[in-house]
Image (cartoon, rainbow, N blue to C red; front, side, top):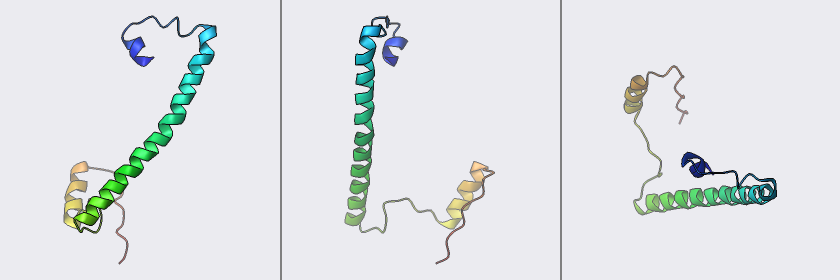
Length: 89
């Protein structure tokens, strides 16, 4: 619908009362499908990253910054937000 709107297409046929029920059903079905598919893609991505980390024999697939690197980045960001405290070992 957004693409049709941006393409200057006539949307009056879609918004007639007799087609509104069908359109709402289609939108609801699309929303119901999108959420689980998003979770599935996310799960597969994390599993792939973990498998690659195991193959590479690294502790984690997440990026790790040294304290000095974090200090330099934080300074360049000029953030007013407080930096998280590093947990005690």
